[in-house]
Image 1 (tube, rainbow, N blue to C red):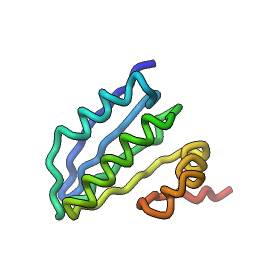
Image 2: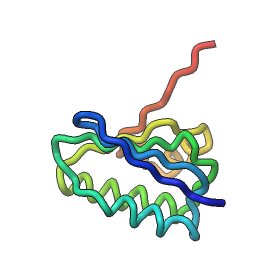
Image 3: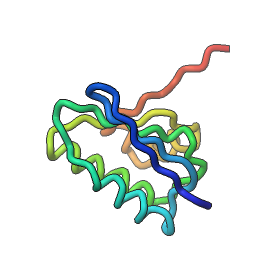
Image 4: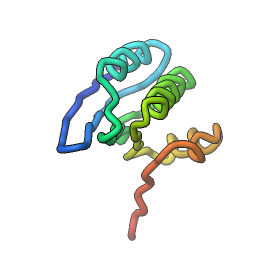
Amino acid sequence: MELNIHFRKESNLLKVFIEGEIDTFTAPKLRDKLESFDIDPNYIIELDLSKVVYMDSTGLGVIVALYKKVTREQGNLKLVGLSARLIRLFTITGLSELMNIEVEVKVE
């Protein structure tokens, strides 16, 4: 499957929209795209994972590397739109305790 990555700036927010599967084959493309922009402490980098249908440990490693880079450069990173499967992955690995993950509460 293909991996599509799009960026959109809105005032002090850089939104990164990721769509597809993040695995051993597509993770290098994601890593390259995420390394292509500078970290500004005044900006929030928001990764929208709502259209990610699969992520393996390689993809998780790319997200962790970005988190470390952003933290080192005193920036802000937020993950949004995670599916229940991705939330579980971040919870099992303990990353949900470190990263700013926005979880939507669905009202029925």
